[in-house]
Image 1: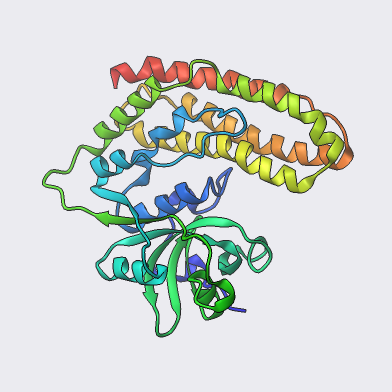
Image 2 (image 1 turned 60 degrees about the horizontal axis):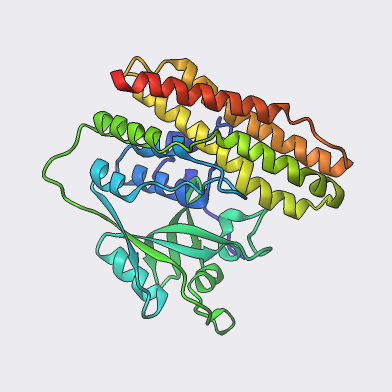
Length: 323
């Protein structure tokens, strides 16, 4: 098996959002990889994170948050377009890399050595990577994944690109190309970010989504406790606690970044965002222990999160008109 090259050993550094000391080290594969791609291209991804405030409960999971494509074009001149893999996948990706684009590709974590200890050579899990460079002769690749930048080679290269007979076939993955456009006028990035945040506040759900989530969770909890199914727990926790927790931690970081431009965004708003993030992580661990012990859980932490959501959104609605 191949050895992973840690992100820290590559010449580029991670963005501050991924350097440790965070409540949630990662959010979801797509959001994290685009954060690192924007950073790699010399942009500040914090400017585009106003989209996190309108994340909502989608009946059985929290919004799988992604950057808004139009925001990326307006803020950074970064354009993301779907790529049609009508030929061999590796050839398409190589063509994009050769003209200076990045390819975002859905791949199998089985072949990603940076997932050592979780999916690597253990489980077939779909995830998104950003391909920065390829060497088809040496069979090596530099890529973005999750919170860092890595390299792979040899058998992992063959497996990722389905070059061996046993890995050939199946439906082609979803692929996007990312290109840096040349714009005639750079926007005022803070002004544009405030515009995005105001737009997302207008898109808030009609009811408190954490109240809706709490009701849904309470209905499911007895089933979880009876089954003690830890595999189900991990899938559920990723779709729920990690998504809402990571989104609000990112929102808190976004608001701190904006404070120099708008003093009305006082630190208490970010503190409530981080409290939502911290409580969701703690409650996730409490749920794991409850499943192991087959005991019910007190739902007061979720009620506290719902109360803080009200405070965050109300404070933003009051502050943004003067920004």
